[in-house]
Length: 89
Image 1 (cartoon, helix red, strand yellow):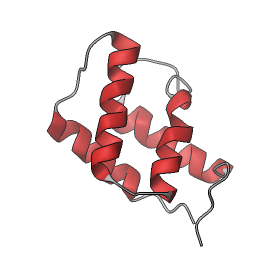
Image 2 (cartoon, helix red, strand yellow):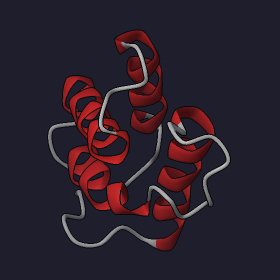
Image 3 (spheres, one colour):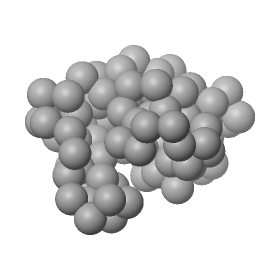
């Protein structure tokens, strides 16, 4: 059974860790810099579990944060795969 509500603190920390360690489009950013993405990532992880949706989400976030994408599709696919490894249920 999946949980559609708010992610647990452990899941939030796991998502935050991947976003900060594996994605990090703003090097040197504070650990909570990408917390605005946690909810959207979580919804994908408990919903479609789509690598493509995660890549699009990260690409859109980069554009919103920096005005342009900074990661290649291959880099974003690796981050998406790391996110999909997170146990959310």
